[in-house]
Amino acid sequence: MKHHFTLTFKVPERRAVDVEQVASQISGSDFQVEPMVLGGTEFSVHFSREGDHTMDLLDFARQQVLNVIPDAELVCMDMTDEVPAMSMVDDITKLVVRACQLFGDSDLAHAWLSQPQADLDGQVPKVLMVAAEGRMAVSRILARLESRNNLKNLVG
Image 1 (spheres, rainbow, N blue to C red):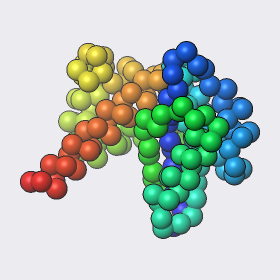
Image 2 (cartoon, rainbow, N blue to C red):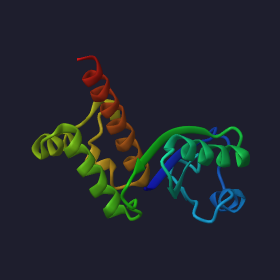
Image 3 (cartoon, rainbow, N blue to C red):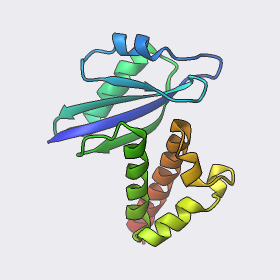
Image 4 (tube, rainbow, N blue to C red):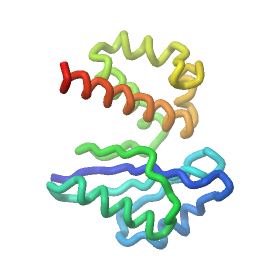
């Protein structure tokens, strides 16, 4: 089965990342490196691989980045069996679908996306999603909520 991965990394604020340099030093031609808006301190690596051992694939990609930037910190991972969305509209759509799946109801998801959220410093998710940095922040909050939801299901 083919999996599509996105790993997001952060480096110390005093250091900006040259994504072209990172991309040129990572082994494998299918790695795509995308800068994030946060002053050049965050970037994502997208790639696709065939295989059943997803954790090995993720660890391989993480190690490729750490070989180039040893002080990079992994802040977010995403894996899907679908080809990842690369444009802003597709990214926003993907977040809306993810929220709908998480809340189990499109009206609840749209209400959450339309109201100020404490986890986002009182900002409205759908307003934040216009910028790449905002989409990443909303994605992190959704991942945290999914994690809490999964933990409740295991315990309850």
